[in-house]
Image (cartoon, rainbow, N blue to C red):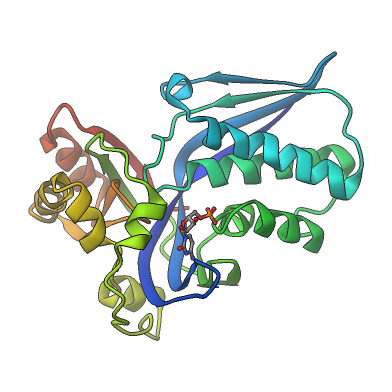
Length: 273
Ligand code: C5P
């Protein structure tokens, strides 16, 4: 059995620069990953089958679980038949939450299958496959802090911020990525800031916050509550929402803030990797 972690993705900043003729948007984003995530387990079996478990396993939409099967199929198309496999997905990341859960799962499947074949994890063919599966899948395959351009697939790794305490808060509203992008205001508010990681984080924005807040106004409340916590460095929405994150000066400040959130909200205390 091969087990791979599928870490949750955050967009520490997400600048939408333009609509593209292909229906996608031109982005400049700062991807980062946290310790918390899903887990994918792959083992040989008599028949290919997908098993779902974990707190969000039963809530998985067909299209999210399809990303796992899609990754398996795409891998086999490039590298040859894998034989029948049992793939188990332990789904800890909320669905349609702006943390790239489905993309991280797809990347973890690619990692697991690559490991079975003895392929290097940085094999360029894996990144081509990832790009075909979804815009965030190459970043999840890389699995480290990086600036993403284009649809998010052109990646430039950047150092720093590992170990920063993070609080993730999701108010339990699922928002559609496609719908949030469709409601983007169409005005380019400028590139990612230049400079060290801290400056990019501090001076960056998430341009999908206004459209996501229009769909799910509770995001305002989450952001305001996070921003008001002692020891908070920054509170921002991730991806297309509705999950928001806050970076903290210390583990103690993060854990105190976790205790101050509304009990009905999904809250996880973790750290950047
Ligand atoms: O690439 P992926 O299938 O994950 O994207 C989901 C949706 O998000 C797309 O159909 C598109 O509506 C939107 N999207 C976008 N621009 C991007 C990435 C995603 O408009 N750069």
